[in-house]
Structure formats: structure tokens, C-alpha cells
Length: 147
Image (tube, rainbow, N blue to C red; front, top):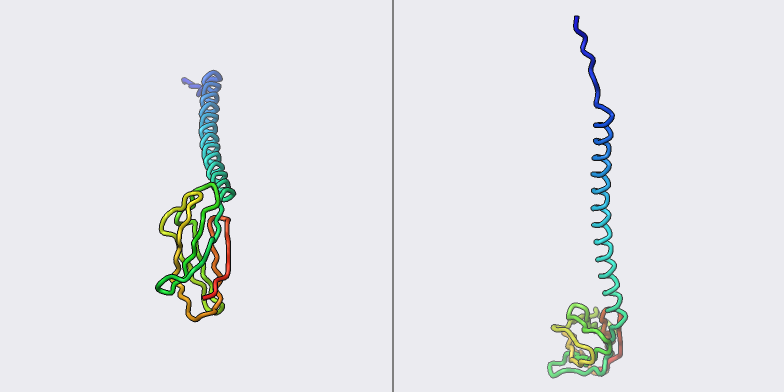
């Protein structure tokens, strides 16, 4: 009768397998942490850039007048140090009674530039007060206009 003894993995091969598994796990962890760090750094940079734009934005209403077709127009100046993009500038005209109307600027405004921004709100009767408000990022200005 022949008896065969089953032999397991030798200790040398076991150590080599454990080292390969450890090195693989360390490599995967390093790759994962590098991706996390890169993503976090990019998000932080975007957030700081946006905060810097908000801090350096400024807008002022120089005058408000009624246009030839009766709509309310505001002459505004970018008093900040950054260009205000068209989607970052909103003109709100609020009548004493009724819903406010908003208008957006069709183009960007460079620092120091003056533009006329018209609204679709028309002066309905002489003497009616309207509140004109301009918002650009975190900067805002407001004034009252009587038709």
C-alpha cells in the first residue's frame, strides 16, 4: 500500500504570495488616494476662483430713464475688477404693485464699462415709483425711478 502525503504550499511560496498581494493593495491605495487628492485640489481651485470673482465684482446704477417705447432702462457701470458675464447680471424692475420683471444682459461687461440695460417693464402712469435693482454675482445696487 502506497500512501501519498499531500503537501501544502511551501513557506517560501506563501511569503512571496503575501508580498505580491501586499504590494498590489498598496499600489491600488496609492492610485486611489492620488485621484482623490487631484479631484479635491481641482474643486478647491474652482471654489477659490469663484470666491475671488465674487469678491472683486462691483456694479453701480448710474441713472434710470424711460426709453422711447416707455420701457425702463438702467445705465449701469461695472465698478469691479472682473468681467461680469451675461449670465451673472440681472436687472429687476419692481412696480409698487404687481410682479417684478427681470432682464438679463446680452453680453459681458468689462471692468469700467458702462452699458444701458433695458427691461420689458413699461411705465404705466406718471408718478408711479419703480424699484430698480441690479445683481451681479454678490454685488448689487438699487434705486427708485418715478415715471
